[in-house]
Length: 358
Ligand code: PLP
Ligand code: COI
Image (cartoon, rainbow, N blue to C red; front, side):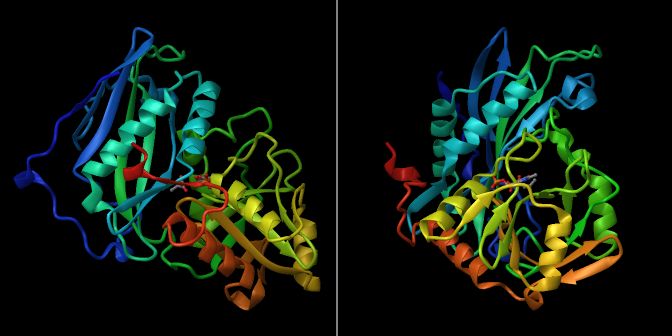
């Protein structure tokens, strides 16, 4: 497919923010976006064009029935070099989300090369300071105007870019997590493993309750027994016991995180016993009371590694690692961010250097 490029004239370009560390996450967008359209069974009209509001029919299916999916990844820059972290995994996950939501597949080679051209055009927007990056948001929405409940015939795919600092206002410091016992995120057979927009809408009530109680995010329990840990609002979760590091298994209800996969790989590489298994809330509370649990942390693209300092469950608050950053959380944070910025060895070939991929 041909990629048309319509650059923003230099006199119309926005001022690039300098203090990215203090921007609210995802609040500023670059000058250009990528778009392509799907109709008549094919993707077409691929374009890098000025960032602009969308003109969308009020009857578009996404607005009524939520047929929409998205992804999240980041670009990093050191000098002239631009890096992406495991971008193919995001595009493959997007195609799995598309399958679950009866949406068309994208050609990941074409989308990746278009993304790389977009990043090259927006290179000056990629911040270079430690703790900053350019967040990339590929999105697909159903655009056919129709009130019947059915998969759309037409779609819009777009990619937005936003310079970001830390996801949590705390920065890289322990966050408080509220265990949801009134609401659930996803049941087996549902859409939990797809990155579909409705999952996030469904999470808002519980996360509002958590925020009102002074916690940054919700920890979800399984829908059936309200007993087993699932994941956090925008992160997967790891619990560090004295002899084992545990993360909940992929049973179709949680997002198969790319950071989760990277953390599991690093932990095994470092010689730890890292296990994907069911982990009940009782086991966690017992471990916290007995001292068997040394650290808990969340991980995700936006949040990177977020140590958990406090856990709230049914009117009780438990403190973890005296609300300090545990050594393993610190080591993983340093290693992951080092690899992502091209500053540390990349033994697993995770980093893609954009300007050298040809
Ligand atoms: N779980 C949820 C619900 C998320 O939104 C995210 C963020 O994308 C993650 C987990 C972590 O996934 P990843 O590491 O691929 O960013
Ligand atoms: C990500 O980590 O990329 C996410 O998608 C989290 C989010 C801001 C919804």
